[in-house]
Length: 232
Figure 1 (cartoon, rainbow, N blue to C red):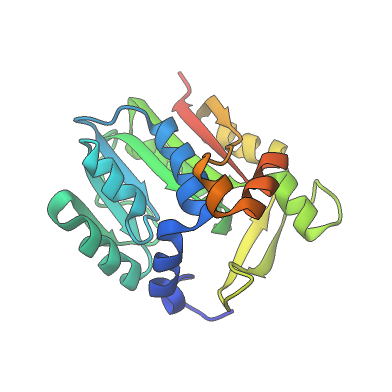
Figure 2: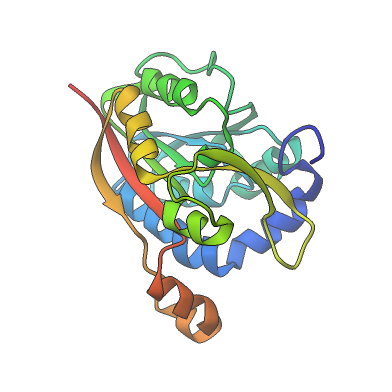
């Protein structure tokens, strides 16, 4: 795999793909935004924001949005998309958020990025630090069963694997496959409780536009999303 930010080499192509793709626009994004709830007047951190597809919708719904991504091209695309409606910066999710004060964020959105990290516990602890006591963290990631079906072997395997993000494109990524018990243990270790777990269902529009994808996702989940709250 190339060195540097994961998406940098194909950032523009991915951004165009993600804007209307079935797994992003009609599956993960609706689920994550629904778990985010009412964000009017709230300070929201979009962590690993990519091209700003979540950030722009959060801002449209009345949130004060901070966002960051490790890819400079993704940050440019996000800034172009959201304009002055969000503060978007280049920052690596694996590094401390030195520019975000303790307890200053009401909601954090971390969509389809946690599985890239080697030290997920450190990142979750840092997100816990910047979250207000009454706040929430909304996380989406690969569903363990989906990874088990794709990669084979034991469901309980916890290891990084290298795959292409798209069957049609050369978009290499490295992700961690993990069982559900490991995902939940990391949440508990970092001071979070699961308020809600969502195995998304595709939106009805997908049935007409992408019937094969709709049929697959109605049969088995590809992603799983959580709304986490700080433990007392």
